[in-house]
Image (cartoon, rainbow, N blue to C red; front, side, top):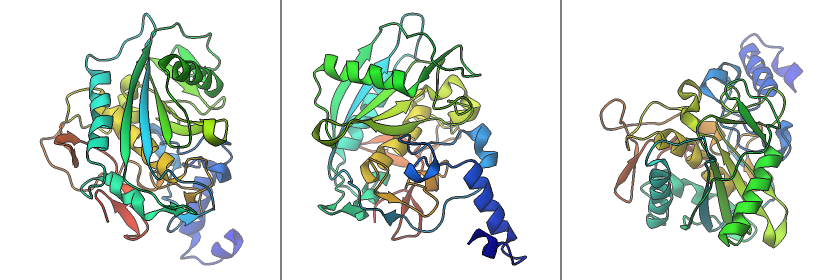
Length: 317
């Protein structure tokens, strides 16, 4: 098919776009050669490779979606590592606000309600199960990240998540999502050359299967390298604002494509991938702009893709 597309002069650009996205797939669905690592948020300094927004509307591939979801925040802050004062408080506020406005059409989370599986549509019905802070030491680096002195593999992060879910007494399952927020200066890689800040800013995945599966997201400290993972607007005046933007990306994608076999387009792009770093209409002063007011608090969140609008949107249907 690509050979046919390349026959015409007018469509040579289309072929080039397809080639670029194949070299640097932004999604991470099962079709994109990243295995179970899904929904990669492409770092700013790597976006030169990501010249495509995917191909057409999202399509359903038969897998499950989350009809309701419960979020949990894990903060891994070993001795010698820090986060800005208030970092976890602002992130917890965000999860609480998203839960408080469940069912409303006034924010980006309602967009997911058009997607479905065999049991019905996604509901904008979110709750926050709480947070847990772990100060235990890091394991020996399992990878090498050029932007940090320490680096965690996905397997090392999975081990941390499983340990903390048990320690906190939380219950896993296909409607629960666990976000692992690491401290500033902690890196991670999914392969030798695909690392936080140079390649991605966050991703989501899962451990196990069935009623005990653990849906999780790797959430590096975005302002470790602001030029890579910070959208530049901090309406809450905290580094957390940069991380919250990519948190929303992974949260929405887990709802609509938790195991990489539900909703994505012909290029393997999930709903967040198709709109990464697109924010739409904004309000507020430069440096503190926002495009979402959720439970009375302001946030600067990327838009999400809507099949009905055939576009990226900031509010409900």
